[in-house]
Length: 247
Image 1: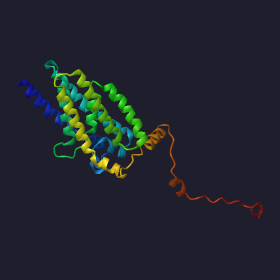
Image 2 (image 1 turned 135 degrees about the horizontal axis):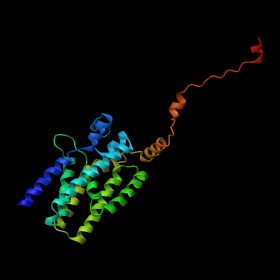
Image 3 (image 1 turned 180 degrees about the horizontal axis):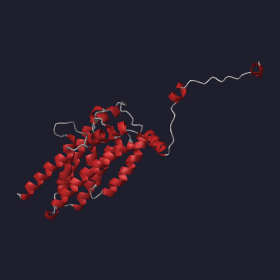
């Protein structure tokens, strides 16, 4: 009975924490803009990247990671003495993701950053870091934002399934079910992206150019566009004849 009450409290608190959308907060605090009215309208990391650049988007992603990971870890610690650390961890993570996708009275995101945050703080965090680096490289190559992120979640789901199948912690089967249900939700939320990709209608991010421009700005190199060069009128050079000067 006590465990039921505790898990009910974890579910409610985790869901409410999931309602806290970092993209909306940062977009308004930093630029006084509503992210749901910009670009795709999705209050997520990738829309932040398209509209505000790399560093603001990266900060948004880290805060989503921290928000989700902290909630999962604290929930696990609460239930550690009952031997339910891992189950409570993923139980809380599930409700954070649900709260992110289906918040109260407002538009939610696609839940990918929250799911990634749950994976990054998991027992296989080192695998998550490796896949994150590979995903960054893949993004530079394919330039479709959702491809490396969804691939990251798929590979982490496979890795954790193998891990818990071997470890067989308490309710390991329930943990595996939670992981794959969350992955299914993420893939479902990106169904439009997959559809546009197959139709060759998905817009590229221009990530490599974005990174190149960012480093140029850091080094103090100003880029001059061709339009600005062509728009400048040519200055007429007048050469006076020496005889005219003498006269």
